Length: 314
Image 1: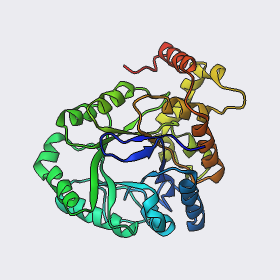
Image 2 (image 1 turned 90 degrees about the vertical axis):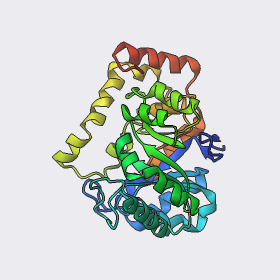
Image 3 (image 1 turned 90 degrees about the horizontal axis):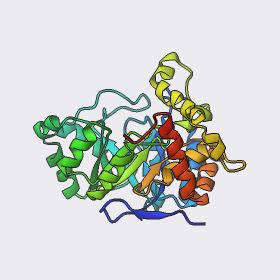
Image 4 (image 1 turned 135 degrees about the vertical axis):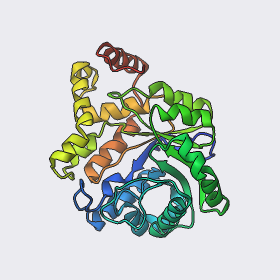
């Protein structure tokens, strides 16, 4: 069965509604354990073999870009490649650090990403974080991004963001895509996904399974700082039980599968990036996507139950 595709905003890129997030390949970063190159190669080729054609990564994700370059650069024509800028450059393995959006940081980052991923163009470059409008204007961020676009290094520009900046970026009217957090257990941006697509901006959803894969892969280092960092995502899983969503599961369906189908059921989602370093979990994600969206009745009932416990779109 072929994965469902649709246009990413007005970019003309026909992307699979199920995309792949390469964040789990943070080889040896502070919070993520080592992922062997062979295993990364296996997963990334499985991604393309499955029909997924949208891959999202970042300079911040340790050796993720390097692993993409080593594993699937020879299949570059088969997928759209999205990364991020404003991140510390010249950094490998450790990742993280302050984000600044000076011309030098952006241009150096783009060039570094091109080199690491063994490609001569990036389909999408996104600001990683939410700089203020004043910062964008003061540093000439858009002029810099348009410059690398004119050079043919970048095709489209976007921003990974959330409220309250999301509404301001919509008003700004300069980005081709927004990467937005959303799941059944975190519906704050539910209507803003539609608001974005209504003005022609492509919608890329992150957190569509509420970090479920992070917990289950066992790749995360069990540090108190990590637990505090992702405590919100842990807590969100309690909402699943509070809302009684278990009653809506099909026979044999997992909670993670239900959450993914809920996310995919949003009519104005263009793609949701779900990542894993586990082949078994990846296959489950593909099977879930091929199963299709929730029925209209189940989708509505899930929303009603979530509304009842205060997990709503407003």
